[in-house]
Image (cartoon, rainbow, N blue to C red; front, side, top):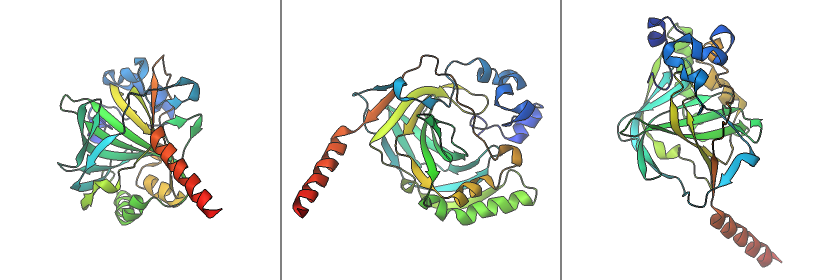
Length: 273
């Protein structure tokens, strides 16, 4: 867990607590602890602003291959974010013929990655890890709009997590039980991929990032629900965008599926004439 987001027990043991503003904010992370140095000096840092002029279409990229299953889950106040940890057998994602196992997912509000200069209301990170210890994160961006179905199912659990914090339990855990992680999977005809880092200390690099191209929706109430279990200093828990430093951002776009859909729509219109 500590690799994704340092828990206060770990951080306080070393006399370090990072945050998102002031003397412990993102600009200072690299100076808070020797283990956090990469946050300041790394050249492959995340998040980034994905700009059109920096995108390269890669025809060799394939559709995201994910296999998610029923598994036990626990909702956790991870101090710097709200996270859901999965039991064994949650599923896998295959990236460039390498298998990564789903460990957890967590949310940031507002979004960490920007898309064409736009920062969105929230961002979901699906965190996977390979046997060699490397990470792959699949991210979804959310704008304010209709309710997100999975979060609607988790409303009662999130409220309970908030209630635990109000009681003074700042690292509360709420058992969710068995869930079908396939309900979290999001199909997409477009995604962006680049090599980056964890977005919280220690900001470890060489993380494979996949940003889904379709921006989805969640309600204002759901955004506030994700923030409510967190302390004030972590409610806005997005790290600023980092320099690209010459990195290549590649795009996958399934033109064939798009063309088929457009052809189908044209046929329907002609039939109505």
